[in-house]
Image 1 (cartoon, rainbow, N blue to C red):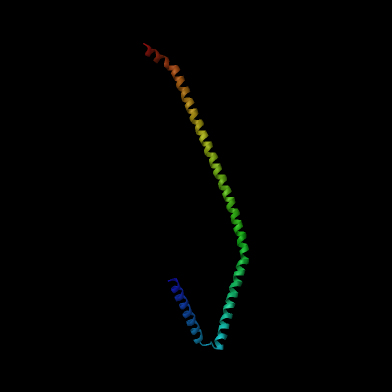
Image 2 (spheres, rainbow, N blue to C red):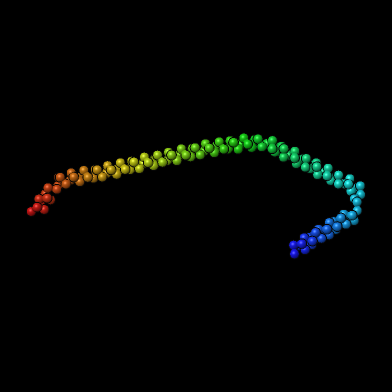
Length: 134
């Protein structure tokens, strides 16, 4: 079975080669004027490609300016990030300071309330105690 497949592949390949050879033999030679036209077309294409190459070379030379601009933008970005970090740290410090102030205010309120309660209990509390005892 594998030998049969190999034989078929070889036969097909030979037929394809023979068909290509026959086709190339039957194609007429192009006249000399066609070659001159081809040269003209190729020269026009060469001029177009050369102009495009020149344009790309100019863009590449102008790329140095864009590299400087890119570097400047990166530095500006770093500066802005540093400023943002400083602002965030400052905001956190202010928030912590506010929390401490409210803690102190709350503590002072509690201490003042306890002191006032003890003082009021001392002044008016004896009569009430004696009433309770009787």
